[in-house]
Image (cartoon, rainbow, N blue to C red):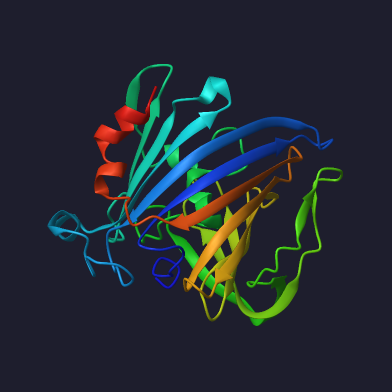
Length: 281
């Protein structure tokens, strides 16, 4: 509940994203760019309309809606990913994909959300490090708090001195700070789910998530995701400038860098089915 009710970004925002993949020898094997729009439809506190966005959101229990259209590489250009998330724990989130090669909109099922996204190490339910809806009926978990203590994590306030090294594919001059965290283990009770268990490092004050370690059904460390957060005091919001994801079985890695900014002009029309077809090529 605290994770879903956290506040990252503004009521409406846009993200320009660049993603790069690397093989086990750290050679780049894919590069992707995309544009992302999101509208918060529930629990709006920063910009009107406050509370629910409109009557449709209230009646359907809609929490947020987003659309991401891919600009490159050329063979991915025109593909569009869109989703509407719901507040009800038993309401399936609606996930749509416009497949440019087929010129069709495909509605993904509950199991399709376990597929990796555009050649990366991230499945749809790994977005923002952990984006899986927690339900007692759909892929239920056993929950345990393994630990509660301080960890060194990348600092929220950034001075602009950090950078990404082309040689070695690593970050340099990264500042760290001590933060109180919960270490939460989610053990899957459904053997059909892609992960056997997930370990989450969650900030005890802000409820944002740091690394998430995902194990397969044989209890082998499989995928880890780690989001980097920045806080902008002028706007009072968190921003997610990059994601690091790793596949520990085939030794592949992904880094995604993004620029997020508030976009009050983004409305429901921008994330509608009509716009999915408009942006799809």
